[in-house]
Image 1 (tube, rainbow over the protein chains, first blue to last red):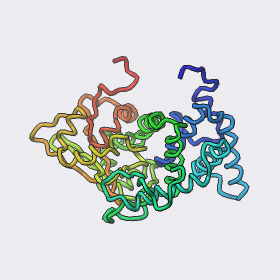
Image 2: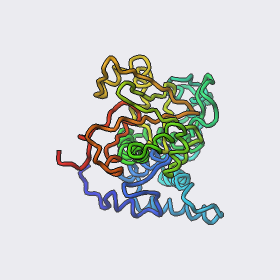
Image 3: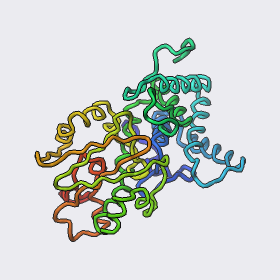
Image 4: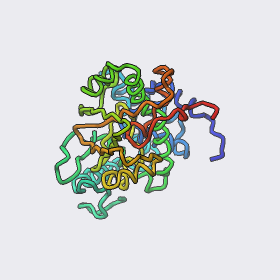
Length: 133
Length: 212
């Protein structure tokens, strides 16, 4: 991508509320956290939302959690990251909550029915008739 | 996540955590719609797994090289010795450290999926999760090592360790010759992720930031 990005990687990260990181960058405890991180970065780079919109969505989730009285120790930071991502992609019309839920169940089903040692793949025909799957 | 719910000997795979499934749902739907490119996502993740992940493990290895008492604790009770450096977490699995030497080379794999010591090595690299590595590491470990650039003499015994949900392995690589004068911090820079999985050796040439 040759279009100049108004915010460099570092500036983008520093725009985020309390991103867990050290001098090398963000710190992830588990793979899904890195995948969720990459999704937000790449969707924003592709122009589906601005980084400012993203930071606002994440801040909203963090504030909501604090308002619910959840401990603000960073341990659930990426839980909120995923929730913000789900809300923002729905708000932008990229997908919708029903499709996400259906797909989530399809993945769980795939894990339950895939023998050990085989890659997990979605089954072509889930029990329910596919709608947008 | 991943392997917390069920042991490995079931005939299907453990269903991962709710958050893992939600992220998979997001990713697969958005990739299918062409809104985001999977290779680009993998590139972001890969950057962080190689740049950030293995540093904790490197500190453990460097400490073991300079402190014989720590090395002994690490080899007898790895979980506790690793926790001494402040690295805790994961899913409560036991850590076991395997020491490489002139006559023994240890190699770690997870044949069933991709169990990996996240708290100290970060995220597993893409090749570790790949079917060819998972199957060939057991069948032809010397061939796999050769592809990673590690040639072992016939007198070196290769031991392959299959990770499970309950036990994760870390390889303690050989300290490179010529590093006797180096400090713990300098040594930690030398230690690569691959050397701690057993598909690489540590060499002085690996010093990052050097002119050559």
